[in-house]
Amino acid sequence: MTKYEKKIYEIIGASQDHLNAEQIFEMLKQVYPTVVFATVYNNLNKLWKAGLVRKISLEGKPDRYDRIEKHDHLLCKQCGKLLDINLADLTEQLQQQIDIPLLSYDLRLIYLCDDCQRKRKGEE
Figure 1: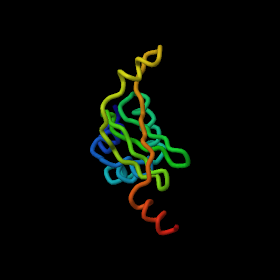
Figure 2: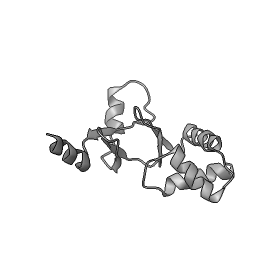
Figure 3: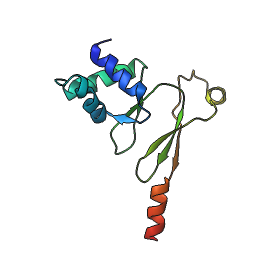
């Protein structure tokens, strides 16, 4: 693992947020001021392909990166706010419903966050 991969992995592992590549780039520049964005992007893809980080793709938004530890997400339909939620592991139940081996799943519960609910009520 390169020094950049290690540091990116540490940044993601230490964060409770769901960082995008640009946010990770800004954090990495604090340690390695000469790093270029392409390095961050390439290393994020390597970490994701190796199964060391989780990539969260949301329509119309930049990909976000997260710890690989088992958890699910609450996603605000309006603003895109993403929160962690720990639900019971559904892997066994899902596996019983399909005939091919299940590697993982990504569960997102869609909701309206408090801020968006307040905005919506104020508009009506």
